[in-house]
Amino acid sequence: MSQKPKPSHGLAACPGCAEPLDSGDRFCGACGYDLSAAPAAESGADRPTVAIGTPVAWPAAPSRDPGSLSTATQHPGDLPGTDSGGHDLPATEVRTDVPVPAETGAPGAPGAPAGAAPAPAAAPGTPAPGAPVATPGGDFELAAPDPRTAVRADPTPAPVPVPAAAPVPPTQGTPAAGGPSLCVACRAGRVDSDGYCENCGHAQPRERDHMEREVTGVAAVSDRGLRHHRNEDSFAVSSTTLPDGSPAVVAIVCDGVSSATRPDEASAAAAEAAGASLLAALPRGTHPQQAMHEAIVAAAEAVNSLAEEPGQEGAEHDPHRHRNAPACTLVGSVAAAGLLVVGWVGDSRAYWVPDDRSAPPARLTEDDSWAAQMVAAGLMNEAEAYADERAHAITGWLGADSYELDPHTAAFKPDRSGVVVVCTDGLWNYAEGADDMARIVPADAADRPLHGAQVLVGHALDGGGHDNITVALVPFTVTPRGAGSA
Image (tube, rainbow, N blue to C red):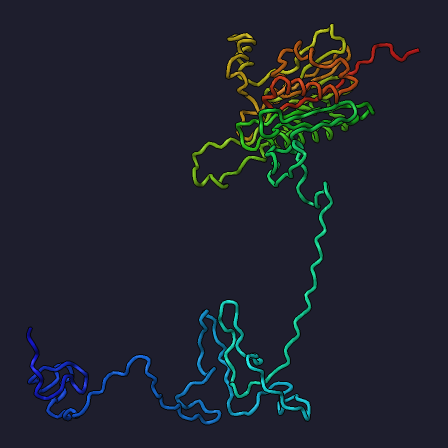
């Protein structure tokens, strides 16, 4: 193996920059040091590197003048820093030029009582006030004070633990205020915020799932049915008086169009607006047929106001997307002064069922539907038209995207007493013909209209309840001529 010749100048490295040297170098190739002027290497024993672990006697730190920061030695608090947890250490100056700290109770401290005895020395292992306190993570929150100023403080007595009061269990069977209610199905689980039982998962009835109301001379019942997730029907029933003091009874039934947006809101708005319009017009002496026409117009305006205006959410993302406005159908009845008035838009219906069942019943409305148009045009008979899958496609409705509004009204003057059935297709789908409807109306419906409406809704539910079901019964009484005379 080759060996490097030993340098004649006796130097292995440049005295100026420690660059390795070769034999014959006169100048350092790195810094230009004149190697001929370098002192000769001292002869004698080699000075080996200090072994690891060998104690080294470091020189003592220079003394520090009291209050001075000019010395090179740093003392606690002189420099900012962080502990092992990354927390900033307080850069509080530690004064070493005073014999005692300025603490209350220490001799010579401001506020210390005169003649106070010096505090005894701290016991071994007892932390002094202000000493670093170890946190659960092992870090120290405070910098260590000057050990010459440490004084002992009386330890603070540990607080006496107070046993916590046992929680009082809630009364069984009484839910907390605002808490979940009990499931109507299993009677054990609680109902969560979205309306389902936490125990059996049964959906709980909502306010509109089943509604009933009875006022003087009229009653109505509405039910969600067995297949729909919500009730999109609505109704309004009321009674008022005409200017001559005679009674007037009002029934409005609306069916939300499921293919439109917010159909439940549409039906509710239409029923409320139509009912309010009739209650305002009839006492003023407006003819019932004219009042019905105005009520349908008011209902249409209420539904139109629900439509989304251009530029709302979704329109800017897809301006060509087809969005159906809220829509519903409407049928109404007014019984006043011996006159029976009906009005409608859509395929909700009104039937006349006389108390004397030997007299023929009648359907008082004509549907705004594909099937009705086929029958009216003579292209199909009624059975064929309503058997077609397009039968219930409506051609008239209340809503911002409907065709030109064409309220239908009709006035009748029955010659005998009976009951008017005002209903949505959720009922008449199970009794389409007038004779079919008359067969399911209870014989005492005129005397017990609420019970009669309940029976009709039950009939639709027994038939399958495929749609929302709403029916109002309006008893119509005809006083025989000469009755009450002497």
